[in-house]
Amino acid sequence: MTDFQVEVYQNEYLPQGSAEVNAIVTVTASGNATPAASAGADAAEVIIIDTSGSMQHPATKLAAAKRATAAAIDALRDGVNFAVVSGSERADLVYPPRLGMRPATALSREEAKRAVNALRADGGTAMGEWLLLARELFATQTSPLRHAILLTDGQNVHERPKKLERILEGVTGQFVCDCRGVGTDWEVKELRKISTALLGTVDIVAEPADLEADFRAMTSNAMGKEVADVSLRLWTPQGATVKFVKQVEPTLTDLTDRRVESAARSGDYPTGAWGSESRDYHVCVQVNPANVGDKMLAARVSLVSATGDVLGKGQVLAVWTDDTALSTKINPEVAHYTGQAELASAIEEGLEAQRAGQIESATAKLGRAVKLAHESGHEDTAKLLAKVVEVVDPVHGTIRLKREVATVDAMTLESRSQVTKRVGRKSEED
Figure (cartoon, rainbow, N blue to C red):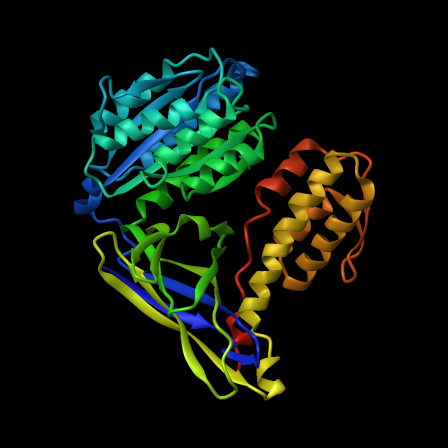
């Protein structure tokens, strides 16, 4: 069994006339992290490999993708239903031979790996078609835990962007998808659009030889999920509105537009599947200003399962005061994650400006990113930034743009710009 705990971090004190309430909601799931053999059939996995012609250049890329797929197949729990899809300008089922999935056994694993080894690279790239076939495969299953891996080395050039958007609208909520780009010829924004819609992750695997370990890790993580389709439910009082809901740790994902009305003044925001883990969400609610001394429940936060069971609860409060010492006190959690969101924006906008040759804007944005990374102690991002700019003074964000930046360094920084650093809880208010 998985237990959920909901904790709310905020400064509930507002100055007179203020109407915006911010809080960080931490959700922690704990329990049986060990995959249970009996739980095998409750999960389904689809592995999608790009087999377009570019995967043959160099030939080691397709060979590495095959080894990575075999590693993912081996990492499946016994009994987990799975399938493998080959993607080009169309989607082809590699395994099993007919539409559906097979439970992972010694025999099915060997059959699947044999089929994967026979793949050849040819044709173009139409990722929407790949996702449609994945949806068809998942539709043959009753498994609540549905996860896919999508690997590509190129851009979605054989499909119009609007078609991909329509397909994404159709497959959203049907399964979770982690996306990986191998090499440097793919587009971060394109894969991020897919992974964001499907509540997954996006990352670069610069060297094909590293695919095997990455696929194994993604599959092991998926096998650790125990509860599917969990939502964050927000109830707000009459006159209050939800300004935004964002996952802010371990990665930034804006869930605001994903709201599904569940009752009067109540809406659900999807969080995907959970194993033993912890995530943080930033909730911002707009309320009607009240008089000094008034107190109100600005939002009730619940974590609910797909069947509507309440897994955990928390409250977001608002108290109006004329004590400036209380109302101006900065909540460390809210401040930290506001800074992390600004850091991600500064990186993405700075890289965009650099690509466009807008030197002044790029220097300002990336300098701001260096300063924010330094202040928040985000060492991983600071190291990635240092490969793209010359850091003169991290405290003040003074940098110089490098004349030559390796494509892989810029893409690595962009693809990991929304990976956040967890706030240190020791800084909780007294």
